[in-house]
Every structure is written in C-alpha cells, then in structure tokens.
Length: 117
Image (cartoon, rainbow, N blue to C red; front, top):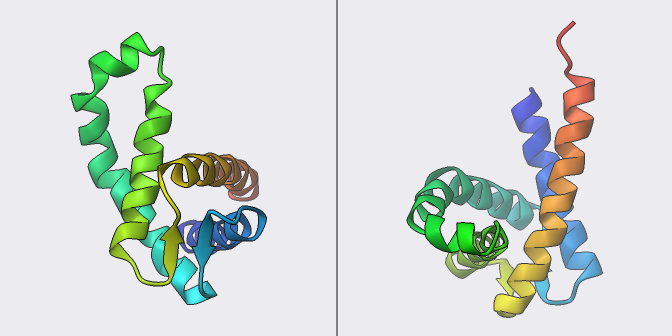
C-alpha cells in the first residue's frame, strides 16, 4: 500500500514540477505515472552504478556531483519517454532538485503515516 501511494504522490510531484517550472513538461497524469516509475527504476538500477564509478569526482566535489547524477537520471527518463520532456541539462538539474525535495516531503509524510507501532 505504501509503495502504491508513494508512486501516486511521486507522479503528482512530477506534475507539480511541470506546473512550477517551464523547463519540464508532462502531458498527463498517466504520463506522470510512467515517468515516476521510470525515474524510480533508473534511480534504483543505474544510480548506484554511476555513484560508484564517479566516486573520486564526488569526493573531490564534496558530494555536489551527486546533483549532476540526479539530473542525469531525470534527463535520461525524459529521453526514453513520450509525454515527459525536459528542455536541457540545466532544466533537468533544477527539475530534479525540486522533484527530490518533494520526494523527501513525501517520504517524511508516508513515514509518519505508516509508522510501525
């Protein structure tokens, strides 16, 4: 139940990003659902590999390179999907930052809602 709710809220967050920032466009809620799923899959599968491969750069930049990796995941998802478009790398960077902050808020809210007693 928690996973399904997080997926729906992540899709809504993606629509919100598209609403507040013109560099990100999402055609519809079903497109947002698919995009949220693909972003989640990319973050689960590709992101750990990229983090490991770029560890020296991440250490030198004191972790700031992780923002670049997040932007690449966001931009890559837009590249493979119809109905989800990101204008460029700068738009991907800002869009992924907004999406990440909303994801933290979603995780925090769901953590409180589904807290084990």
